[in-house]
Each structure stands twice: as C-alpha cells, then as structure tokens.
Length: 245
Image 1 (cartoon, rainbow, N blue to C red):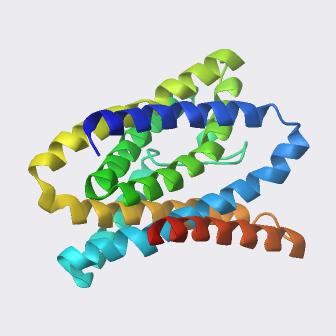
Image 2 (cartoon, rainbow, N blue to C red; image 1 turned 90 degrees about the vertical axis):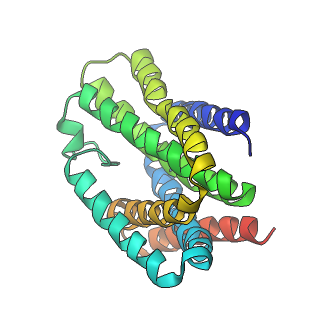
C-alpha cells in the first residue's frame, strides 16, 4: 500500500476510535459496564490471533522460528520496561495508578503509544495489505476501551468534556507520523520487516496478556466467563477469516 493510503487509514482510524469512544460514553453507566468487558474480550482475541496466526508465522518464514521468537521475547521485555516508565500503560479502571496522574502525563503516554501503533500498522501494510488490515483491526479495536478510560482521567484532571474528547483525538494523531516515517524507513530497509513483525507480535501479546486479560478476570461468574470467551473467540475468528482470504 502507498504512503497516501497508509496515512489515510491511520487518520480515519484515529477519527473512528475517538468517535466510537465518544458514542460509547453516551451509554448509561450500567450499559458501559456491561459492554466494556465484551469489547475488551474481542480486542484480546484480535490481538492474540494477529500475533500468533499472522505476524509470528510470517516473520518465521523469512528469518526462521528461532530468531523470530528471540525478537518476540526481547520485545516483551522491552514493553515491560516501557510500561514501568508509564509509557505503554493501558488502564480500564477509574482508580488505577495511571488515573491518579495528571491529565497531561496521560496524554503524553497516549501520544507515544499512538506513534508506535502507526509504526506497527504501517510496517504490516508494507508487508501485505492482508496483514495490514488484520493489524489495524486488532490495534484500533483495543484502543476504544483505553480512550474511554482516558476520557475519565482528563475530566477528573479538570478538562471539560469537549476538551477531553479533543485532546484524546489529538493524542491519537501521532499514529500518522509513525506510519509516514515507517513507510520511508522500510522502503530502504525492507530486510527489517520480519523483525518489525516479531516486535509488533510481542506488543500485541504483552498488551493482551499483561493488561487486558487481568481486567477481564475481575468480572466473575459463569455467564460473564461464557460471554467473554465467546467474544474472545469471535475476535480470533475474525482475524483467522481475514488471514485465509
């Protein structure tokens, strides 16, 4: 896919995530509490499926399974360290440590994360349109709960609702810059594409397992577990379908 197409998809993606998040906020609190775990479950399935069914196999075919898994392991350790620096923290609860920080710090972390989202999506599109679509779905879907949570942070920090939505949107736009830079970078260094795929797989695995899944475990009960499993499976099936077509 060309530069204009990648930039357009990333811009539309940032706009769509903010728009859907704002609509989600219009739901009554009871409705949000009901649908949030299902949305997170779907995102978890998308992330894990993209990592294990798309990114890792494609990287392994080019540089071998051993080197791919070394990069995946290194990526997971890297994201652990970055999270400790409060750069990649995705929180979905109103009382977590991130939500005690100032709104500006939250926006800075979101902007940095959005930049790397753009890097991952653009590198995926550089490899194939199919992989780019799968990565975009996985990443953009899991951004919605983050946007909703960050909106609460900003309002609590003194932002009006309109300003909170505006700054949330602005914090998502660095994804375009990350995508554009990646387009030019990978155009000259295409041999790094499988490494990007392995590291992007690491980021998806880490976010899904270290961040999203623990939040799902807070919702107990057979019905909640069944619904979460169903939506997680649906996320996997969506990516598997895209992979096979």
